[in-house]
Image (cartoon, rainbow, N blue to C red):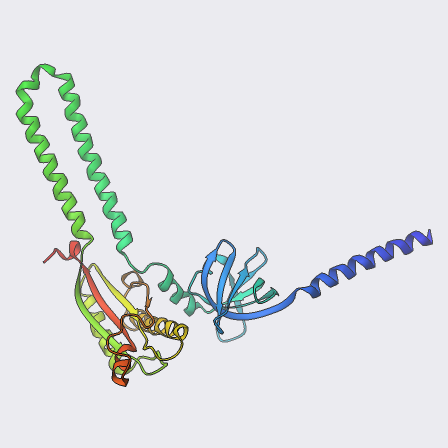
Length: 312
């Protein structure tokens, strides 16, 4: 009996040692960065040192954001983990892959991520509405044609007498279809109604007072229209690393979008996702200081929908 108890104790001790060894094998990892891609429960996070790490989200992962000025945090659903969101993560694994235990983010960063990720360009939604209207008109036309055919089949003896009337009806249907198609084509056309450019100091993404005024003027003009979009594209000069310039152009575009949303009260749906153009499309030569100053910029373009504005 004593030998059996000793055997059971030894087995339990072995299991505990194995569990302890497994726990020690998985290192605790803490980091922060920006979500660049989400595939199912796997997040690709670009860290502050430009490294990419896979963060695995499980059913046990706590996703939370600070509440108030204290240390309280509110837990939310994992659906908020979208590309463009800045976050901090903590979990087990290595610097290639981490299984997250907690993920923490700021609500302001989530708002900005939604601007970047979700759309912000109403064109797709408007096209979907246009297609629904087109299908409704097409169904009405098809129903009218079907009714005419049924009447013709029921009144074969009147076919010869009604040929001209049928031809006239078909011509009218064609004119309606052509008019409808033209109207939907107009709805996908955008006019440039205003433009603005703001400049930045070397390595900076802060807006000056003059730049804020230029943005506000364009926003006031935009809000006089019903169907409009403000396109935002950020740029950098060629000084420094390409990766740093790409990030800097992104931060400059985000600063302009944030000002449009928070200070100019432009709705999110009327702003296109910020374009981080890096050193592409220079406005001037990067060989001179004045040319580089021209290239450290964000270009804004006010586009008005022709179908809504009534054309020109």
